[in-house]
Image 1: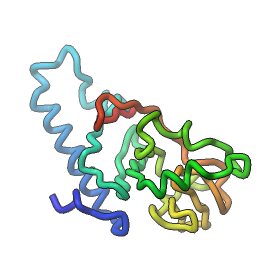
Image 2: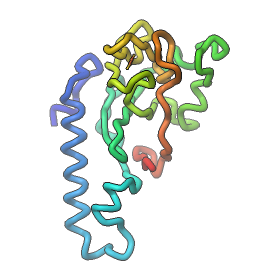
Image 3: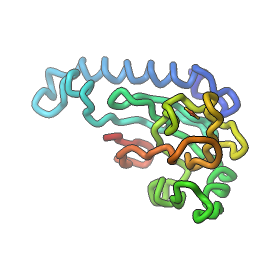
Image 4: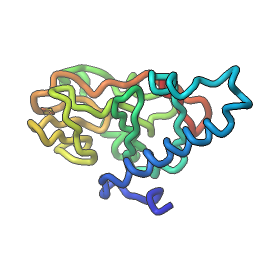
Length: 177
Ligand code: FES
């Protein structure tokens, strides 16, 4: 389980592979118990079509960003540090291209967790985490810079990284969709 200890500085494919593996395991587990919950659980086709997915946040270390897919779209789950939260909260919202307070982009009492779609709002490239002059994300394609709230700060992207529909179903678990 070395991937659990992956640091923010190691934003590589390892995070994705870890989550992808976990997701496959979850699907396998769901399949195994299928006979017992067939009246309640969505089948594989329904999941592929966009049924809600649950994700356990426990292995995501502070400072780490993990990537997962929901409805075929990339999603970043970022466990923000206190410094990253402070930076996001103290930003002058009126100065932003797409003005949104950090508080409306996270769940109350859970500001350490940022969940956003993972494709640049310019032309869809995948931004690099913990990079750029605001230490949020840097899109390598045309230089869009996002802050630690996923808000556009520099470059051609017109809007913030959107927040997908999700909720906390327990202290350390979210349901997307
Ligand atoms: S696709 Fe990200 S800046 Fe163009």
